[in-house]
Image (cartoon, rainbow, N blue to C red):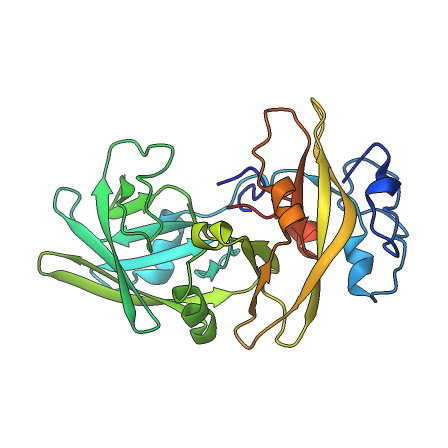
Length: 306
């Protein structure tokens, strides 16, 4: 994944910004206090209210880590059940998944010394993932994401609980569309004669992201807005300064999408924009990203990534 979706997924000229801004686009407002998520009094534009949010500067600070853990969920999911499987995102006290969010896979009641598989069913297709118990989870957790067939590593928490490392829940199509329309993620887990099934509800936050296949086609997905919403997409320049939060400033509006019934729409990235956002920056270097209104205020690190 590129740096632009900083868990996420997920993620503007500071000098001579006016020369980089398209005609009729609002000039980015000044930030009155570094560290605020938004600037005060953003400049309005001819594109309407959503662009008030596009025009705001924001700081790309971390979310502070997600507050989620399999041991916290067992009493909600596995009560009076000998086995259970679920995927969960940071959703307060609820067990649910959020499209584009960092999540963890949990298993309860399964042996740590026998083969385990987890299968997701979506859109009439089955995606099966082998589970690999390890003493310490590697940096990529085995490389699996529940949809690419690669193993997912899990560690033993004791009391029958197996927990994965962090996964980015961003299924490829057609699984993503099917899960979005269903409003839930259907999971099964098996090991020998042990078998269990579960349905985890899907909840929405606004965002933008791309699967590897979409990235190769110069496409990104915009998601979470109500059906029929016209969502503008902005190109941002992200300034990095040692010891400070990365600050994103709007360069220009690059297009919009209309949300489908699934609350997902696909945006084809213009070639000149793709050349900017597809460059992997060196440490400490400025970079570029795409973003959508609203998401940066709730999840500051939402800039498009792959």
